[in-house]
Picture 1 (cartoon, one colour):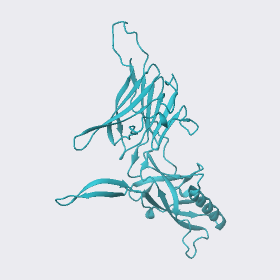
Picture 2: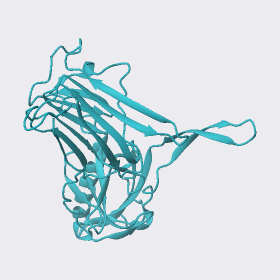
Picture 3: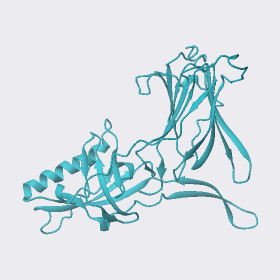
Picture 4: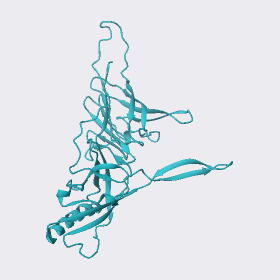
Length: 335
C-alpha cells in the first residue's frame, strides 16, 4: 500500500502583541502581554494603555532552575543521577497611572482582578506572552503569588502607583504557541497484479524522524484515524553510553476494557501523553474515556527528546484514509 507522507509543518504566525519593544533583563528587546483566565488580553509594554512594565525590576525570565541529585563516587567526586526542574517565580513591576485618582484606581482594580482570578478554582492560570520584534512568541502559564498592594509612599496612590507582581509558574518552561505537526496517511491501495506483482504492507504506516526544536522533552498529542485494528507507537533512542533503547505503547480498540472492535474508516482516537488521556471521537472531556485501550502495564507514553527522534507508527488493518497526526508545542528554557 502506498504511503503519503508530509513534512513537519508550522502554521503561519499571527504576529506579536502590541506595544513598543523594551529591553527586558535576561532576554533582550521584547514586548509582553498577559491573557487572564477569561481570555481578556492586557498589554504590558504599551504606555498608551495607562499601565506599563518597569523593565529594570523584571526577573525570572532566564534559564530554568534545577535541583540536582548526585551519587558520591568511591574515588571522589559525584555522578549526576537526576536533574529536577523547579517551579519558576517571575517578578514583574507594573506601573499604573491615570489622569486623576478615579481613573488610576479603576485601572488598578481591573488589573488586580485580572491577575488574582488565576487563584479561583473554576478558572485556572493566566498566560504571560513575550514577543520578539521578528514576531516569534513564547508563553508561560502563571498564577498570582504576591505584589498587588502598591508602594505605600507619600504621593503614590493618588494618580499613579506600582505593583511589584510575583507570578508562580508550575511548569517553568516557556511554550512556543505555534504547534509542530507531523502527518502520515495511507494512500489508495493498488491492484496486486496491475501492472506487475507488488508487495506492500498494510501494517506499517511509516517510519519518521521527528525533530523537536525544544530545549527539553515535549509530550505530544496523537490523533489516530481509522480504519485500524491495532496501533503501536515506538521511539528508538541512542543513549550517551552508546546503548540503543526503545519505548512503545499500543492502542487496541477491541481491548477487554473497551470492546469497541476495529476502528472504522473516519473514526478517531485522541491520545495525550501528559497527563495520560485517551478519548474516542472527541479529544475534549466529552469524548468516551478509552484509557483502558492501552497495553498497561507495558505501555510507555514516551516524550520527544530535543533534536531528532526515530519514530515509527504501525497500524494493523490499515487502509485508505488511515492516518496518524502527531502534534506538540516546543518548550524552551528562556523567554
